[in-house]
Image 1: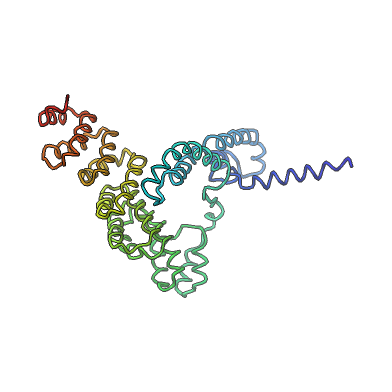
Image 2: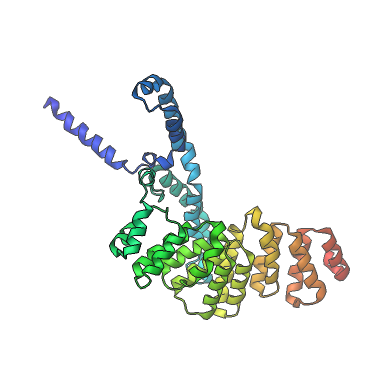
Length: 384
């Protein structure tokens, strides 16, 4: 009876180990400081390792604590932010009124969801951040791939494509696609690998080729969309706009394409998308809502600010609802470019009467002296 405590302790220990087997700290990608200590301070020789142990063990423990409580949580902030935006702030196509009704709930839940998501991502290895230290130390020999390609060995090619190693050059993926053009599974996997492996500097070389595979498979479209965003491909985004204009897309594909264009990092694709959807009443509310969401939370990069600021001028005076979104945007960033464009529209007499007051108010709120002076001369009563 006295020894009955041992099975209980063992059971508790096993439960603890199993429960935390997916702990983030067990993935080397999540502990960069520990890896640095290991790489730079731990000798390979056993004797030297014993001598150096009093130095690297305490430093390793400190590095582990810093990784666990500071470094890794900071790394996961963008993931938690994206999850929160996706869950609470991404339109689900439920209509403008429904989305607006959900707005207060989104505001209340945002800090809660963000905190819980960050806590989960910081504690457990659920980030899709595969520990490739063993895989990449022994990558698949390219000779094996080329041999299988030469002999038309479908089984080997398929097996190699399913290995999570992205060390194939894009031209190799292209050769596989051409060799197995009629094999949808191989083409699908090769396209995804190809799109994810092309460097930005080589992007233009493959754009026209990849465009031909748009609107065939949803996952391929997602991969191509990521590539077009990463490379800033105007030919890719233009092709997507053309496909949307044809209206020969599924609802899921349409959502992927809209997201790709809104995240493209260029003003032109966004302007083309908005102009396209303003033409149809049933899609106008959807695109204005999604554009407003993106312009409020997404177009905040200083490097891209001038691109958007000047590019979005082309959307002024197209629709009252869209004007409200743009005018609020230009006020928020105190845009002299936007103020000047609005002033020109006012002076030219192109604006409808219902828009005059809002435009004047926006220009005054932005506060650019030159534009205010023009407005006061053109509309003497506006300053009163």
